[in-house]
Amino acid sequence: MIKKTILGLLTIGFFAVSCSSDDDNSTSTTSSLTLNLQGLEILGADYVYEGWIIINDEPVSTGTFTSTTFPQDFQVNTVQLNSATRFVLSIEPLVDVDPAPADTKILVGDFNGTSASVTTAIVGDFSNASGSFFLRTPTDETGINNGNDENGVWFGTPGMPPVPNFVLPTLPAGWAYEGWVVGETGPLSTGTFTAFNMADGSAPFSGEAPGPPVPGEDFFTNVPIGEAFPLDVRGRTVVISVEPVPDDSVAPFVMKPLLGAAGNETAPATHNFNVNLGSLPMGSVTRN
Image (tube, rainbow, N blue to C red):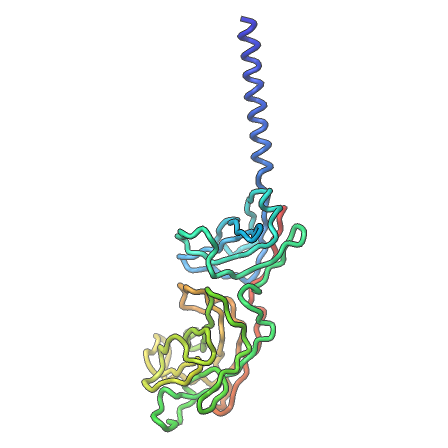
């Protein structure tokens, strides 16, 4: 009876120590990673943001999120978090069969002690961005100017043919530029592009004649609800945005490095873009 009692006490003691040890391990194996970001926008229903810490050039996920209210905390393996040298934020499919980060990496920063300042440098350096556009309607012309140049916008310097004049970084895989003119009901796309010296990827509103070898659009056909075509571009806001690829939104993405206002002069006059660095997301990441 005494032996059984002693064995029982030892058993209870063993389980008590084991539980205590497990509790200690569970509280010490993860640490908090705090994201305090500005400028992100809500993604479409099929996409999420995902954080990554980089350890010896290998990515480790810190979790996904859809809310753009910060700060947000994530529990991450302590050893891995303390070993991380960089933080990356990407845009990922909601249903994602690939365990690696997508090409659409939007924020990056190196840890300096316990924190990292993150910027869109992984997409490109827009600090010296510039460019211009002109008003002309080449897709409505058959060898002559029809006198309606206020109904089209093209990016570059007018000429025979027009030439590009963007000062913009070449975007990495996962991103493309897109032009926009703000109409009566909202932004109207002029098409996406990654090269400046050729036509963009679509001509949703242009006429039947071929366009020049620069991105742009005439506004004659396929009139959106609420708009009146031909659209007079004069006095309207013209935008160059940076869009994720693939893109499930018909609206401009938050990154709009160039903004301009179309004046009253048509080609050969040009209108300059202004750099819009305030549209670029940024923030800080802290490991605790």
